[in-house]
Image (tube, rainbow over all chains, first blue to last red; front, side):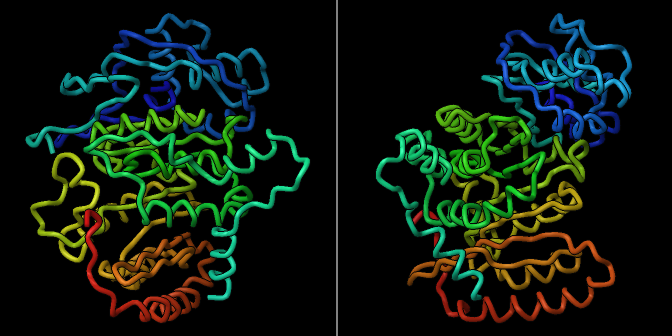
Length: 122
Length: 277
């Protein structure tokens, strides 16, 4: 699971009004380098919730992302590299995503987050 | 219809490979046609690529030029099963330059795992999420997805078989095979970007002309990209897109409706068909 996906996932338990962002508890992760694509990063930037990205990256020991970001920063190569690395190059293999409202743990196994709900949660 | 026939001929003709071309070029031509069946991950509880999967992959291939020009940013398969379809899409469109990100969902853990393995075996990356339709992604991916592909559980079954564990969920579609389709369509409407496209498989028993009318009411135009008809089954792959021009909407919708009625009428005598037969 990339941090891009983490940025797009919410807890969808019945009755939960504040299911975003999910807190990331990673036990095992890997880094796979991929080519940086400026167009993709520029296009996706306005749709990324910055704070959850920074917090999940920092929980993995990545400190290169600034606390706040605005579109003008996309002109900086250093910023783009850090953004690209956090968003697309880190793969969380094992761990869990925690619902901010209920504390429910959604496990991540072999890189796949399990967001399936129990019958009483639908 | 003329257009469809032309596209069909593209999907069944083999690529012309001239003598003297390098092996690498030949390989890239072959892989660009979609996932390779021997690299698809198999599991007893996962639906194996079958006629409907091939029809959907062929539809995507027939529309490949349009898809490349479409320049999608995010693509999503709902109910990815073995991963054959999303992997085919990724290999057809290429993702070496990371302009496109691929997502896939399923409610079957074995299917999610199979999709991960299938995509890895083809050297493409698909982000797989275990979730019902797209429920955990819907809020944040709203109006962001440029291409959605769906081979839904469309086989008419008793309602209690819908959403069962394991492979049954891949085909059990409830009354008229529409139970899951009718839940998927509003979700897709929410996910698709302004320029977004949906490709979906349906069976004659699903009343595809009615599906097109319902989507028409949501502002979508539609056309059949591929149709396959045998004694046992009649499959359509339908492409849907938003009609952006408000002034044109009423007019085009009528045109679409009329056309879809005539497209589907010739299959109305086909018999029910079970995916697992």
